[in-house]
Image (cartoon, rainbow, N blue to C red; front, side, top):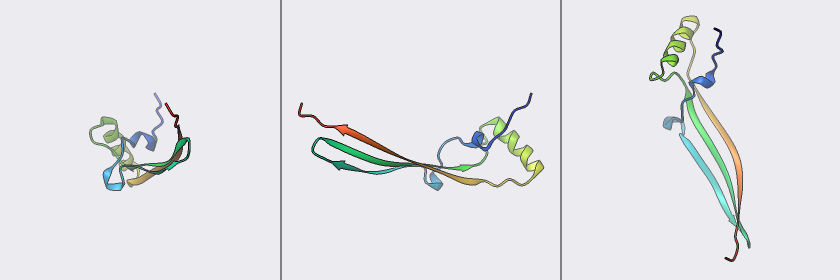
Length: 88
C-alpha cells in the first residue's frame, strides 16, 4: 500500500518556544456596533513527536535517506467580527 507522507503529518499543535498560539487585535466602538479586527498566529516547529509511533518511523527512514532539519512554521490569518448593539 502506497501512502504519501507530508510535513503536515508532523504538525501536532503549537510550540511555546516559537510563539505558541497568539491572538492580537483591536475593538472599535461605533454608535451601533463593536468591530473586532483580529490577527491570529499559529506557531510550531516541524519535527517528529516521539509519542507518535509513525513520527519515529518516518523520521528514522528520512534520516537514513538524508539529513532533514526541523523548521519553524508560523501561520497567520485576519478576521473581522461585527457585534451589533441594540437598545434592548
